[in-house]
Length: 341
Image (cartoon, rainbow, N blue to C red):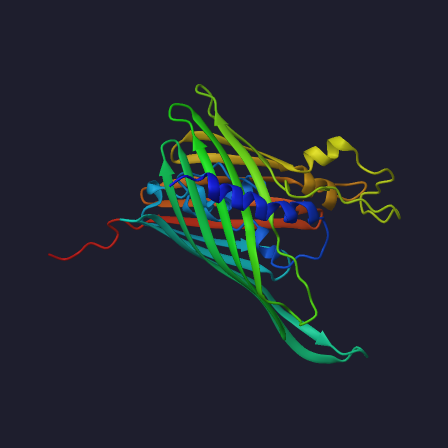
């Protein structure tokens, strides 16, 4: 069946959203943009073209889902700020109908104290946000297309919102060179319920374009990923002068470009060990203080594989107050449980 008509319909649906999207704090389900696996966190939090061997990257781009992920189980634990933590689990399987993956992510904010208008303690309440996804992909020569259907829930004390979302992705993998080009449309969908009847939450729609390339005789693999392509403005500027970084002049065109880009690299010692580094300009510019940055925007990590087990770690720096740590365990479950004769 020709893909021309479905692609044209998708473009028509996206154009109004692209025209109206603006930066701001009005979107719900932003937890879906938190890098929930070690590779993604180490590569700057945004990457859609690296990770052909890593099943956890299905959350970044469902088009990466491939036969190498068959019977892979991946568990991630993200230690965020304060008591906030996220746990995610992914399992992939190759069936007669193609390659499928099921994933679950759960973000727990811990217990929060509640006070009345006069400052007296009322007790505690909890906040949790979680998403369940089913992903599928198909190959068309060097091209691969994938999609994820997600049910996302945000539960804040007595207020709850839910949404049905889609991630759509495509990749081109060069048949001879270590080159991958990818496109992903993330969090496209509809609200099923909102926090209140008169609320009008926006979904965290994002369109991303990326490329990953490894020169033939170098141990490095380089990635560049552009995000926020559906937004007209990717720069926050407060004309009242209340910016934490002390901006007095509105950022120019170069800032509009570089705040959309994330640069990542992988130093490959062997198929079983590698180091990862990245720079996220948007995070650095928005979270650094005027006189000190605290490494904001930089991230790093490593991967080590021993037989059927793969261990990864990532450290992402956000602020002088600290950063996040992500631990990942990948298990190839093929043959792990042997059948008795």
